[in-house]
Length: 180
Image 1 (spheres, rainbow, N blue to C red):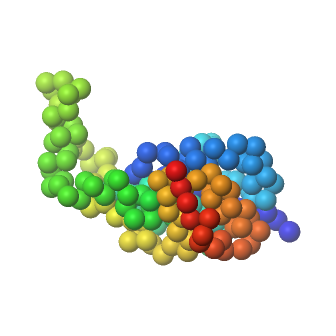
Image 2: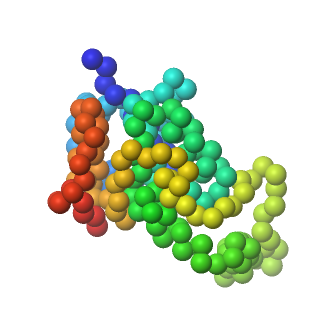
Image 3: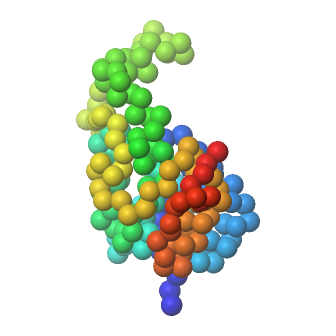
């Protein structure tokens, strides 16, 4: 029997979930023995196989049109979609931006920061994605498994990947519902 194919991508977040995944240390080898790791932020493959994967994993919140495209593509190419971390599950820290006008947030980020020179301006180019209200992945696409945590603990991620690698949907309750 072929190993299930797993792809991962990140949206608007801090890479804490990816660091927690790497905190599995040598258990990554056990996961690699269970699944065929395809596209990830840390591999050469950057998008899930056009033919599809068994498990797609998204971390980070959706905060622009490009993030929406990534979420839609991952959902369309995945039999099972996992939201990994509070940003993907709830919008997380990234969603704090929703308390401000988008124009004010962009002005602060690109013009008013202490490190911006006198030429600072908000980028406006048709090649750039359009910022949107910050949302959870499930606000854009159907999610099959939510793994909360900021970031989720490496033990929880290992459990989730091990279960999915064996064709089971993980049950996240009790000691499997903890984080740093």
